[in-house]
Length: 292
Ligand SMILES: [Zn+2]
Image: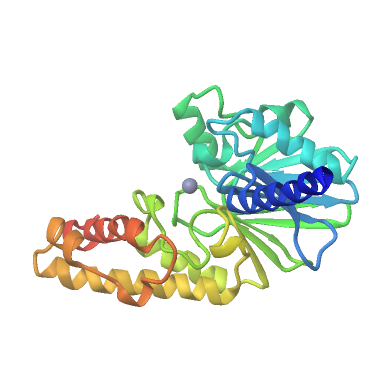
């Protein structure tokens, strides 16, 4: 009888533990992209990177070590769990610390760091010891060929930053793009130094590229990857926000009245709508109410 009681109690405890586990996302996770045998997403907190296991070694991206240097070692351990091949490249998506800080363990593992030329200039200006400068840079396009795999790196102009690359696996039709294409979400803090007009041009170029799945630099709504429809939706959102603020700006409502009054009800069901809307309105007030 006593045993039975304990057994029942054990069941209750494990059910509660499971429920708690589901509620709390683990600090990191590695997921293979469905339909491929070589493309992975490494998630650390709310950031994520792509890594590709080729026949001749690994191409990793963004080390994600800002404020959590140990996570970079975890990232490398996660790669080693799926392959014993060496890490040949580390590609930076753009110059922002939250994505590329902490690359030293990759460098120590023998990886060649590749980035846009402006990322190197920004890192030099910042002079932060956590930010490891790239070994190789370019300005427009470069294709990394490693074993059986090609990874095409393209600079599409100004958008979320002045150094952002999109990374495309032509054979696998996968695109990795960081911070300028949130998947099914209202953009937030990243709007602060966003280039609104130029970004629309970059997004149109992304839509014209050949790919099926988008890996975003932050997990999409519900943790999913993106589609071309998500990219079109983001472009529609930005244009709608831009047009709405433009009207208010011409009525002299930027900054405060616009930030207090304007709503974009079409998008109120998107995650982060309430929190992030002020960032969006402020940026477009900068454009249409101030001229920058
Ligand atoms: Zn960024």
